[in-house]
Length: 506
Image (cartoon, rainbow, N blue to C red; front, side):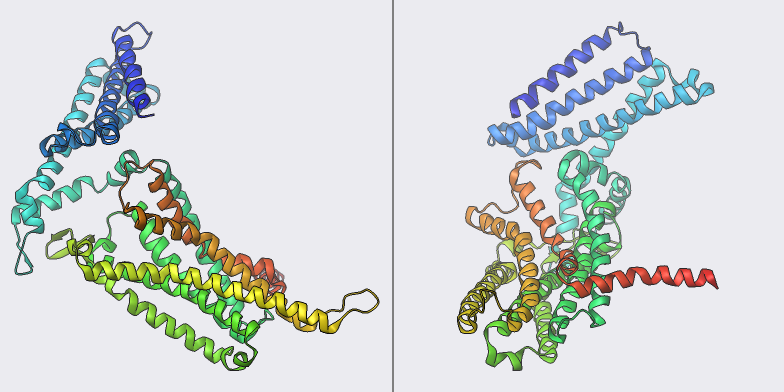
């Protein structure tokens, strides 16, 4: 596959350059100039990116191109040629717009000379941009200015501070386009649509669930209602913190006040805390149903509204305390006018035994242990139900060949369906994340991919998308399994329409 990627585009672009350069295609000299320039730029992209980067990494990981100066040069060439290729397409599009829509400007602008000037200007500006970045970010003096410390304090370099401001201003509007072109093909484009839709659906369904369940008219006990409301609130907070403040912000607002280091650290802490609470609320609900069905003596004391409130509050506090260290795992990438920007993991996070142990503890605590506990509680519940149903059938017997309805089993049916639906949804949507985590730990493949098309890269992002989807499924489960919840939802939808009709009649 790599070989075809490097050979076929080369041949196609060389053929295009040769044929177009002869000027016998019936195209104007202006169009021909743009098309030749675009073919040449695409040819350079193929040489620098697939050949000198991806094919080299796949087949020749250790070669002279891995020498730091040459590696830096290749990186510079990749960014430069890609930007030139993209913006030459923009220039050609604008030329055709002028030729078709601007008759007065057409004769002056759509000429071979203007095309040559535009192509040369674009190439020069983009090359200067890339050289600016390389000069500021790669040189050792800038590195010392940005990252050097003495007695735990940053040293200020006025010249480097001005350089950082310039580079942020220069490239802030180009970042999303570069991500799409250079690092995030298909998956990135899917996420651009997926996360906004997920945020809209997640906020709507969880708010609806909170309002309807809080009214207490769904035929569920107060204990179950308390757990379900708590789970809906936790899921809503996960959607706000993880989907909106991280994923959507990353895609659509790459540079904003949220990138200020303290705010960024706070968002990271909130993401871990809300996710932990959401997961462990599901465990608490599964345990509550296990006690209700399997532990008759403990049921009257444990399965109460007061106990549910205590459990939810305790889990929330412990989740926040357990997630608090994440706030201190980051440090700023830049400090501009005494304002720290961006969050990067501290170097000690990957080397300190304490941080390594904390990360392992967190990953085991969420979601590995909850995953096992939910399977355990559900397994024990199923076993108890099967055993008790056989015993009750044996005791009640049969009359005239017809089954007698068991009021106790009918009463439990609603809780059992609700429990298995919520637990099953959680397990199915989290299983990819859990399996992928264990795979990473066993193979030691953390955060290392050859390309954005690498199966590991795709699997990691797909697992994250499925995990966040679990924050939107519970309300759908209520609609499908709970008759009274459906009735309340219908009433909620009808109420604004009824109100509008009454206002119109007045």
